[in-house]
Length: 173
Figure 1 (spheres, rainbow, N blue to C red):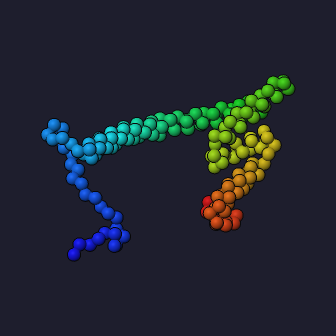
Figure 2 (figure 1 turned 135 degrees about the vertical axis):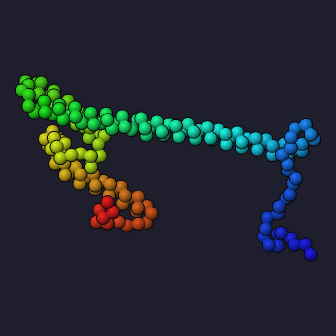
Figure 3 (figure 1 turned 180 degrees about the horizontal axis):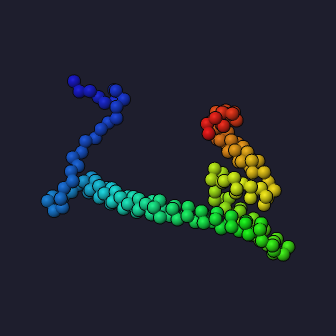
């Protein structure tokens, strides 16, 4: 007794004899030609993918071994320059107009530097300088930063139907 595949809700399977053959031995059927074409295309795409993967790996290696260390050295040198500029501003006697120009330069360098630093990378001396330059309490800035992070996480979790309290958020850090 032969079983009918449709009785068991199984898909009908069509079996063909597709074989990769070498050119010239026998004429290929239409299905064999299409199969060979698709196989060649898959092999080409795999080769292209492998080349791009090697290129990506090389770029990541250059980035991590060359760019990041140089970026950190540059940031460190900017920090040294900023602190010396601040000392010059505080200790040297300049005319009022020169002092105002120098203060604006120090402020612009401070803003540039603080944009590239993470909060945990900012030492007490830098916090004090920032407070003196901008007349802002640095602890308030840190608290505002934490609040904005909490609001962002809360907004994302709310979309997923999860409620979070501030003390739960602080515990996770």
